[in-house]
Image (tube, rainbow, N blue to C red; front, side):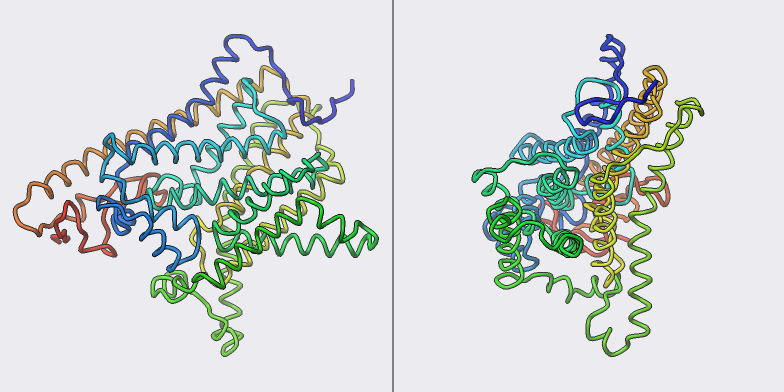
Length: 477
């Protein structure tokens, strides 16, 4: 009996839609939603949120202009402009709207990753729902994913970056896989707008995309010099996407500040071990060694979690299929090209950050695409190995258990920290005078040592003294 071929519209396993399967699928979709609700409605503002103005009167235009002058990115402008609407802890008010926007953006990112992995819209089926929950676990249990729940300033920043990156790159991924993409003036204009927003959202990912695209185009031209014409390219949505990207580049680096504010920051220079071009020219050997060590450090932050996710997916596959039926999936030329381009993009993205020991959140878009690639491949492997409904359902059940455990643990720590900070805020509010102090221990969020699976602390040495409820707050110890 032949193994069924891979078709984007079909699932590798198609269990009958019994009540139990529907219930399992529903639970797999709902548990990540519950995690996100807890994340965005229970957590307390973090130190960076207070530093950027949480709990103070809003100044939307002023804060957006200040963000543009500091680091010209639309994600920073949005984060700075809306953080003032947030109270220190959730209470029905203006910040409810922005917390709902955070929830919608997070679900959109998970949905888009699932859509790309399945190459079709997710359905109410256990395999599709398990893919959605696996995406959730693979992202939120890593160093990169912490930026999506640790504090509102980074949540606003990196959720916007993640969604804009996925939406902009989706047509290019479809084209690599020989999938049909729209060809119309409306779509061209939409890609120009997306290109502008994508380029304006962050510094590194658009540059890595442009370099990767250039390498792919040059390689294609070398292999097939007669491929396409300049006229046909100008009429395509790809030209308009790059046009929007180019406009955002001019706005960020010619009109705006680019990344100059970060490059001149003592924190950036010391903590991230920034290597300037001048240092590289004056000390090429020592600086070159640092660049290599930074590349290795940055690459490990992406490759490490991807290897763990890949091993877990492989373990599920080998324990769910008979040895005789296991097969290595055959990749089409288009799929091989897509995986090669993905590997190149991750490598370029990592190299582009080699001037610093990158914070994990800067690598988030590259990691998310890596997760999509892994799930796409293992979905094909499940199909080639003829994974049956019963073991597939067991595997989906394990994913559900993992999602529930993660959500319960996070909810428990979030609620405990909410109560802890509620007491601290009450103490600050009731203190006489315009100055008061709190202990470091009273604002510390106790999570698993080394794992840091929880929100960031409400206060830290780098933001002290802080202004809360109009009072100057110091550390007592």
